[in-house]
Length: 110
Image (cartoon, rainbow, N blue to C red; front, side):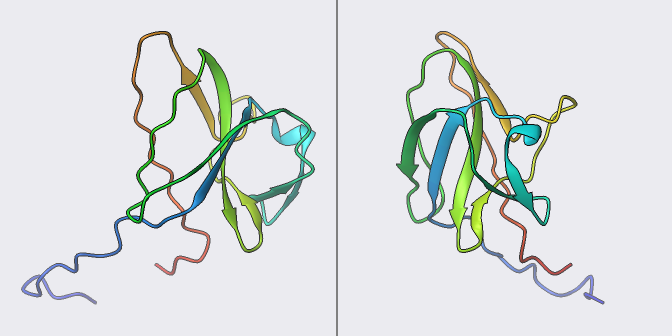
């Protein structure tokens, strides 16, 4: 049990990964293992970008809806779904900048 007097650990803020941006993809369209690793993605790969050492990235996309995945040893990883079972959905609107936090926690111990 952590002590309330112990200094907070800085933790690991971000990691470098390759991010894959696909057209919006539904979980019914792919093969999935452990609920978070996806293969056989039939939708179009729109862009691939490598984040910096802290996990930050910027990419210019046309307005639309996309699915985000990171490349992990076990496959393409995404752990967020909307109410329609779309995998890590992100909506890009004309003239707007959006921030996305992609939590990679498949090996986390709590």
